[in-house]
Amino acid sequence: MDSRQALMLLVVTAGAFIVPIISERIGWFTAPCEMLYGILAANLLPWAHDPGAFITTLAQFGFLLLMFLAGLEIDFTMLRRRGPKMLLRSFLAALGLQTLVLAVGLYLSLPPIYILLLGAVSISLLMVVLKEMQLAQTNFGQTVLIVGALGEFLTILEVTAYDLFTRFGVGLPLLLAVVKLAALLFIGYLVLRWLSTSVTRKPGVFSRLFHTRDTAELGVRAALAFMLTFAAVAVLLEVEQILATFIAGAVCSFAFRGHNNVGRKLSTMGQGFFIPLFFISVGMSLRLSDLLHGQTLLLIGGLLAGLILLRLMAIPLLLYAGVPWRSTTGAVLLLSAPLTLIVAIAQVGINLKQLQPTTYGAVLAVAILSSVIFPLLGRQLLRHEMNPARRGRIRQVIRSARERISLGLASPPVSPTAAPALIPEDSGETREVRPPTRLPERRRERARERTSA
Image 1 (cartoon, one colour):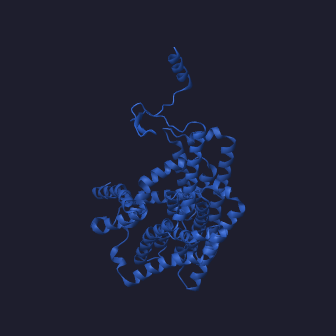
Image 2 (cartoon, helix red, strand yellow):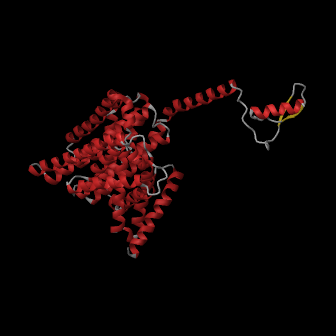
Image 3 (cartoon, helix red, strand yellow):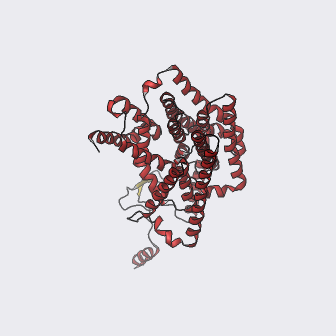
């Protein structure tokens, strides 16, 4: 590492530390703020345009970890709880959205890369907003999460198919690429069956993977080895790595469902350094001068309008999936901010030379603006969904208080240093009363014996 790369490392680590504090103050989400920080750093510091091989490698690892965590966020227990009928409806809603985007894109003769961008669905910011509003476990939250997760999987499959078609064209090479993709999916299926069977039959062998106080962190090592193995196999098979790491995360989520320790540790490691570094490095690749053109601004506005309008057209599909009518607009806004997949599709487009640097910057600007504007508006429109949860918590508190009163436990224990209470009597005089203390029954009996003696 030379002095320039050391300075770049200081810049990105300072941003990874400072940006969450600032984003919390202004009420924005962290990921778009990290991209904005990268844009400002690259445009204010002339030597920061090229991050260097060291930062680029760390950012690439952060990207793979981000897609692995996206697959790990799929809650298969929740999918099973919803039942096959609701799962089928959610899948048809996600498939219908992709079909609608494809039909509109073909009718308007849009380039395939823009069709992928307009149809992208991701649950990264969606999960953050629902957890923040305490809606992730409600019927509305689970329905939107399932639609988003299935839509994300379909989007990744479409991106992979587009990558193969662009690189190999129509013919025998494309057929071989499809066979390789099928081989990757089959490998994921075999690993899933083996892990599920092994965890069920020999839970003791895998118990160390889930220990919270394992100094060797064997579970984290196994998960990272699993992720990087799938990424390496994808490179050898010439398949897109985002699909491989997403499948690896989904396999781990299914095989080790109910054990979230490893997922939390990986999320801590990723969100603490590697994933912020990836978003900052993506922002550093954007030039503000590329956005100051009339055509670029029109492209940004058109993509933002397309993201929201196409999802508004899909409101009947969300109603069919089980989203309440009053909450459809909020759900549409949350599904219109696929930050991670827009960035991933932009990376694929620039690698395949389907996006020019100017249009690449416009796509990144759309990713930032959509992840800032749409979730904030959706959070405001979904305030009413929080009321049932709040009313339920209030009813639970009232029920608990009534039970305590009926059991004679309404008075909480008071410390000896508590201040005396002044309670007015009927005569109008004020007397000093010490709050009653709750003593164990045996101590009460001893006190009565001493009093009687």
